Image (cartoon, rainbow, N blue to C red; front, side, top):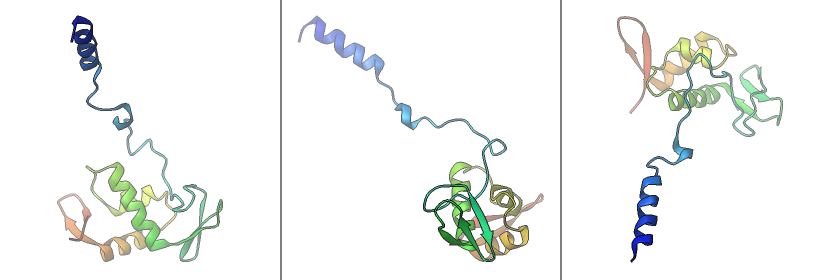
Length: 126
């Protein structure tokens, strides 16, 4: 090993990045991100409600409302891990397509209810 090899090694070490560029998470907020249901099949946001199902206008995939809401809660918690799951936030996250009452019933059925001085929120069942 000569001085040239050592210089190359030092240069490589100085250029080493602990976090690869694809691991850097973009900065975003709940208020600025687009809300609404995403098709589980084609990822389109062109969804319409038909009675007890949601149908994608793009690929015609049909999904039950409860499953779509639970999937949306998963998306919400993935994107905003520090935010509590509340009926109001999930209603807004689903772009108001589903009523707050129905969202609340689905959350009560699938999550544990937690209460604090301000509001009710939900946590995943163990």
